Length: 396
Image (cartoon, rainbow, N blue to C red):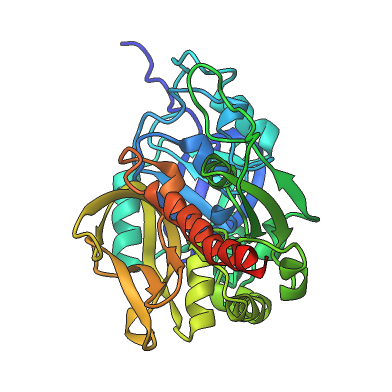
């Protein structure tokens, strides 16, 4: 009888803080990383997810098994480099089969310095996250398969987690910059906005590039400021409106310096639009509170009910904190709720063009179910100009 073949030695392992260990095969960078583990149910967009600054401090488990099948391309990156700490997949990344692909996912992960692990039972892992909450984990990749499990477990248990952690300062821009690139369109690709009509200041808590593109496509001339920008710096640019971007970490921690700025912007009576962390920042500035979720919302198939229209929007989400709708003060209207768990997904002021949503309208998984929000923001800025223009005419 032929000799039994030995199973290949695992080259990566995932150690949960409760002592559970998953073995698999590593790809991408080697070494170790510690983070919170979440799962994402999207069937596409893995490169956008890995480069979304909102995933700072997180390792992403992809529930869809065919990760890598569309390869990678620079056009799909939401930031200059990968931000998510690592990637967990069921099968080793597949070969790319897409006309837009310019490279393979495994090589891209190596260049980005991010660790991946394949061969795991992601269904079991996802059930554990849903039942027990997003765990703290240590992920290691060693081509020789040598792991100090006691050390990895200690690191997973010693990690402080996202509660109380301000990560916006880590992913925000170092200095202000101008943005005019619009959304991708066939066959031209990305084109510049050459005739903007609204001046917008975007506060970068970890802004995705496609959000800025959507603003530009809606007719906005966008100036991006760092997360630590003051109200004086914002208002000095004389904007027609202010946008509050997505971002990672605990909104209450970022709110220590961002909420005072937002309150002063609100006092200036400007249209304000927020997404994700920007939504949470706006809610805090209006007097509400935020709370940590059990395992958060991460995916491109989340149904959201719009109370204003009665319609259901299929949305993309990525958040581990949420606005506590029970703490919304008088004058703040809850506009959107998740049909998965009833959590808050949108607010607006009853008497002013100030609004925000918890999900990502720029991701357009519906498709484009929620792009109207950018148009609403542009319409609010246009409406604000009408009285001012009339006053100028009357002055003459």
